[in-house]
Length: 367
Ligand SMILES: *Cc1c(COP(=O)(O)O)cnc(C)c1O
Image (tube, rainbow, N blue to C red; front, top):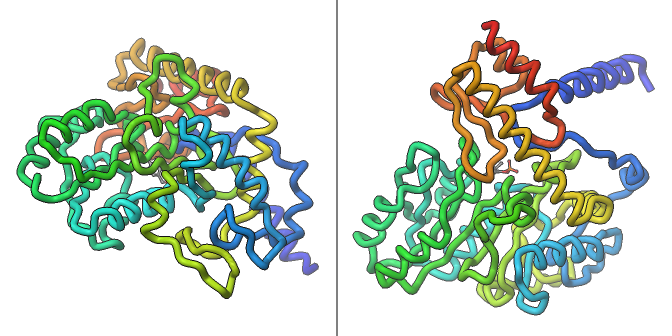
């Protein structure tokens, strides 16, 4: 191999390693070891179409993908016989899929989501050409329920496709599912579809005692969860979970792949299913519960540290997203912070330790 190629690769690797140690702004767990899976990178592990139907392409990981999905089915309280889902390319695909199913169930539906929803929700509405209503948010980032009720009432002749944020991207706020259902009922809207965008918190709340419950014992249609966020993985990925009966709206047998065409992408990342399976096997329910507790405690710690220096900040319940006033540009660059308007946040993931928090708060103080 040409020396310049090796040099480029090694320079990039050094940079990736260095930047990984300082990163605190995005919800990515950077603490993991998938090196036992390295050998798979010599193979084109690709899952074609539906994870539950065998295709003629056999270099796949559908068996492990199914096991990953059943782990989530159990976590989200849906029986295997009523359940369907797949490993996606990330939160955006899961959201697109959820809104798509909602639209297929209610072609005349209006999409409701709050102004704090992830930008992928508005993008899904645009791609699918669904008319949408943006609901105001409260200061903490949560849905403004009065405005939601008002807009529903105004449009009650139309079905409602509702996106709920289970942890908003910027402020870590959780929209209240019980209240949303109550408002739908009070306005006599029986034709509704609820999609839950649980990109980050979807892998946290089920492990927290007393946290709000979001699962399929409620009349929800889909939940989208990221794989590269709380679980962590070297490639972006996620899962989307739904009820099997919705599939009738869209499934289509495709002779060319000899599988059902139920997914948005055709060739899907089979490596991602292996990574997720390995993470679930090696860390397990108890492991994740400990990690969630660690992150929530450290988020509380960071919040207390900021308050102690009178730095403007906010931390929502059951959240690891510490919001604070936007610091100097050099701190934003150094710690790779995400910002909106006058705010920035640190998302306290497994690799954001108290030492890192102390170092950051020290720098904040001296600026
Ligand atoms: C990160 C995030 C997404 C999008 O996930 P990608 O994997 O980047 O596509 C969607 N919704 C919320 C709330 C998120 O935080």
